Length: 310
Image 1 (cartoon, rainbow, N blue to C red):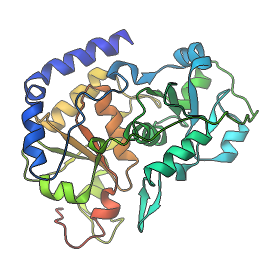
Image 2 (cartoon, one colour):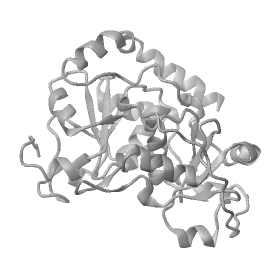
Image 3 (tube, one colour):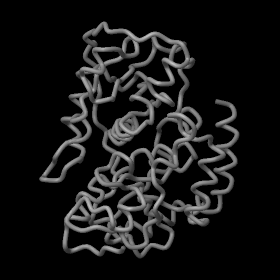
């Protein structure tokens, strides 16, 4: 954790010139419809986001553990002791005809209460390994205002590789108490993006594959990408195995991709899952002003009134 803290500090230093103009940035983007940025809100420090199996084992009695793999059969076959199962539809469902969107905050908060989430208790999310679905739930929890969210780096694969046991015992969690305190600064809408595309400091990060980005792999009515967006396939966030790359490697990846453009960022993909993975990667690097475009290409690529490049 100390190594991540040191490296995150180095990253933050490189961003200092941009971060110093946060107040003026708020004013400039508000004029185009955005009301606030995420800088300064209370949430998990960058160096504490990713946790190890050892950390989770030591702190298991004081955290709520959520299994986000989305497969109830896989959960019943073996999961981290004390973990509660979170169905995929809790944070990723069809809303207003758009697949993969976050349901209403009140519904999500109630569903998370059902699995034991509380405002005053840290949450650790995990999935099978690569962090995709854990990242989706991580982002949803932060968007709904939870201030202590962690992600088990490497997921269940890392847990078992470290020699820890899994269990088939399913326990009914005590109902939590989670009041949704929505943070609009962590989500982007199509209308906001349309208004902000002319903002030279904005980085729109497309976490899809190169084929999807280029428009040769078409998964909506139209293929291609948002004009000016930058393609950083989410798989590049992963190092050897199932864990995130080191902070040094992630910083190098995004330094190169962004070419010094380290202002506000928006992450997207097809349905907001891979984009959430990029959200976590940037959060680990200490980037505060990053949003997920929840509609992603599922919405943008199926509309005819928005620009597309390929």
